Image: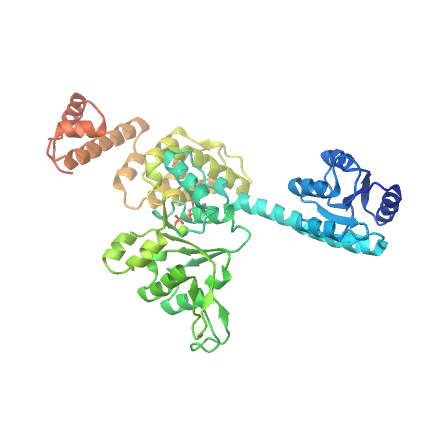
Length: 465
Ligand SMILES: Nc1ncnc2c1ncn2[C@@H]1O[C@H](COP(=O)(O)OP(=O)(O)OP(=O)(O)O)[C@@H](O)[C@H]1O
Ligand SMILES: [Mg+2]
């Protein structure tokens, strides 16, 4: 282990001990500082962090060893080795309770000190490395990866931070590409299970039998092909989170077993007789309408309620179009980095097109469009003609959209505004059985204004969409 940069603070009021420890540790390549009292030590600690402190329990002046230990443990990730005089075992026990790494009784051999110090540094390094890894994980999967300022997405973020620390089961619903995966990860990696595993299973891609053996595991010989005993994902996720993606596709037979895990925290691996107990937080996601599946008896009602303790509904992108500029910027930066490009933004007609488009593939579609555009262009501002083929394709047979893109800007804008007015007004009017007064009230405009729109677009009140 490299000792370079490893700082040790020796705190002792006896100059003899300070000198001996200083010399011995410096000789072994450590960087050593000494302090002769608790107050002195606190002064030194203000300016510098130490991996290890070797601390005498009996110190003169205002602050004794135990108090200093407590202060250090509250503020730093430093490992503390306690030195006590012969007979000071009670203090030593108290020090251990307050988080000391170990204690040694005076007089001690230098070997004893070195042995302890090496172990303390190893532990310190592991903790530091873990802290670093976790901050990296949080950067990659935490709340900050969910981009958006709209009220809709802020509501989701608020919910995520409120539920992250609980163990309650969460059901995330929403159309494809709205960020369900992203949210599931953010919940795990910001919550108190972040040091444990985040295990993912996609329930849609596995056959009934395979799904069962994946989830619950099996014993060797449980079925043809079970050549080895295999641990299931519930067990693998013990203490952590199991993300069950596409939960709507679970066969009814497997649903009962999942219900049991949710209710009793236990299950039996295939071919086994012994139940396993686990503590797993379940996050489930689906883009299907589970209530409808319950009505059609495709999904157990009791399981639905067990899963839906907390519901997070992801808004489709078309309902939070104000986030499009921010998301666009975010994805441009992301793919600039990957492609080593310096694209600055999108042209105003692309901006307008993005705003009007209905994004059936939601954020995934927006990301894909930008990814492809960045791969293909070297212009500083992404022009419309680069975007067109992808959006058309992604939008499927959206004739209206295709047609818009072939028009000059002003004409296209007018056309889409007309289409919006017609569709919007007809829709609400229809809901209000053609009653103009009620319709105007519902959408928050004057009756006269609504009349003008109706006249302009030749809409008769009472007409249906
Ligand atoms: N708010 C957001 N900010 C940044 N990126 C996002 C956001 N929402 C989604 N994405 C990105 O969009 C893509 C699709 O998101 P995700 O996979 O989470 O969607 P999903 O709802 O799970 O879709 P599906 O139902 O198809 O599984 C991912 O690359 C994700 O990183
Ligand atoms: Mg997903």
